[in-house]
Length: 192
Image 1 (cartoon, helix red, strand yellow):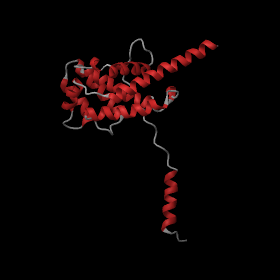
Image 2 (spheres, helix red, strand yellow):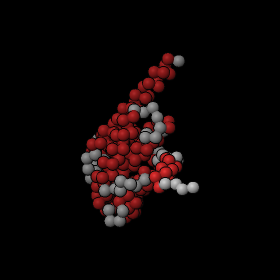
Image 3 (cartoon, one colour):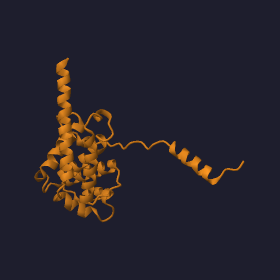
Image 4 (cartoon, rainbow, N blue to C red):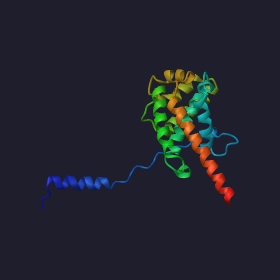
C-alpha cells in the first residue's frame, strides 16, 4: 500500500493536533512572603503590590522592597491568570498583569522567557540578601533573571526603580476587582 506524501503529512498534522496541551504555569510564594494579618497570600500580594506600584516613592531607595513588589507582580500574573479560586476576577486583570510583567522585565533587564517561579524565587532571594546588606548574594540571585553580567545593572535599577505605569495600572485593577469581589460576596451573604 502506497501513501502519498500529502496524506502522510496530513496524518502527522492531525496526530500533532491531538497532543496534550502543556500544563498551565504555576507559581508559589516562599513562606517568608506571608503577610501577617492578611491570611491569603494572593490577597496580600494584590494589596501590597497595588500600594507599592501606585506610590513609587514608597520604593525609592529601597531595592529590597522593589524586589518584593516585582515578585508579587510575577506571582499575581500567574495566580490571577489561570483561575482556581480567583477565576471570578475581571478578565482584563490577567491581560494587564501579563503586560505589566513584560514592562517590568524589560525595565529591569530581566529575561522575558524566565519562568515565573524562577523570577519569584530570585527576587525574594535578592530581597532577603539586600536586607542583610549582602549585595553580592543579591546579585547572584538576580543572575538567574539577567544572565551573566546583568545583575549589577538590575541591582542599580531596583534601588532607583524606573516608572512602571502598566504595573501601577494592572495592580490597581486587581485591587479594584478584589474590592468588587468582596463587595459582591458580602451582599450575597447579607441576603441569606
